[in-house]
Length: 95
Ligand SMILES: [Zn+2]
Image 1: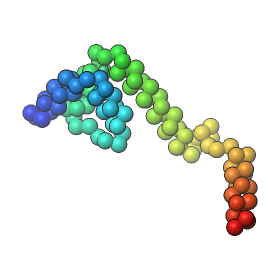
Image 2 (image 1 turned 90 degrees about the horizontal axis):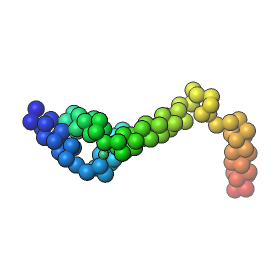
Image 3 (image 1 turned 90 degrees about the vertical axis):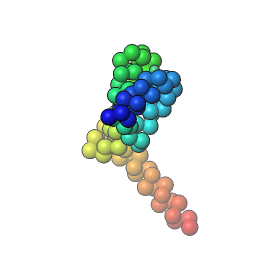
Image 4 (image 1 turned 180 degrees about the vertical axis):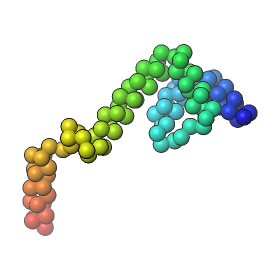
C-alpha cells in the first residue's frame, strides 16, 4: 500500500518527459498500479501529455489494424504480393 502511494507521488512529481517515456513504453514495460494511477492523474491536468497520449493511441490502433490480417483494408494488395513473389523467384533463379 505504501509503495502504491509512493509510486503515485513519484509519478506526479516527475517531469513530462518521464510521463512521455512511460506512455511510449507502456505496452512493453508494464507499469505498477501506483504508476498507472499517477499517470492517469497527470493526464487529467496536463494538456501536452494528453495530446501525446491521443497520438500514441491513434498510432497504436493503426499499427494494430495493420497487424490484423483479418482486416482486408490493412492486408497487402494482391498485385504487390505477386510482384514480391516474382522478384523473389528472379532472385533465387540467379543463384
Ligand atoms: Zn505532462
